[in-house]
Length: 162
Image 1 (cartoon, rainbow, N blue to C red):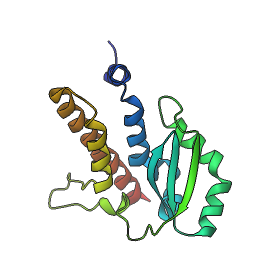
Image 2 (cartoon, one colour):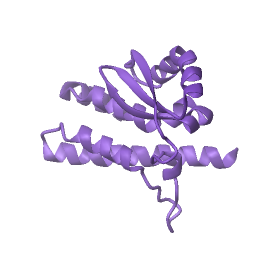
Image 3 (tube, rainbow, N blue to C red):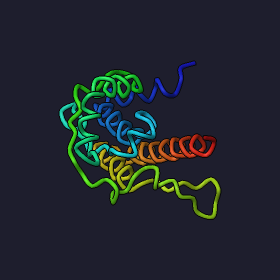
Image 4 (cartoon, one colour):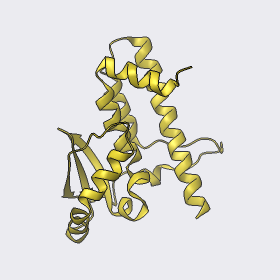
């Protein structure tokens, strides 16, 4: 019996949106991939032409991350089914006032509820707009939101255990 992950990947490749899904996955999982220290001073902005643009707190961190660029590209590509990123460009941005994934981990009254940051929801919406079939688009959107919730819950449990 074939894994649902393999079936979905095959379906997404046939739909020609697998690349956009992987881009959304990079943006959504950035903090978990690069680690707490780097995600505390940087934030993924967008991906264009297989280049990840990352906002960085200041020029000192921008230089440090530039030195780690190859390692970061390899880490991010290793988290994907196939390598996608070719480069990372660092831009100085005020990331303190931006919505961040770790700030989006606030719980409401229900212990199982996780607030998904606005930028992740916008990315999911942008990718799902490319799917013509309404039923498939709705199923895909629900799946991606559930995936984001699960990843945020895992990251939250990891943060609480340290």
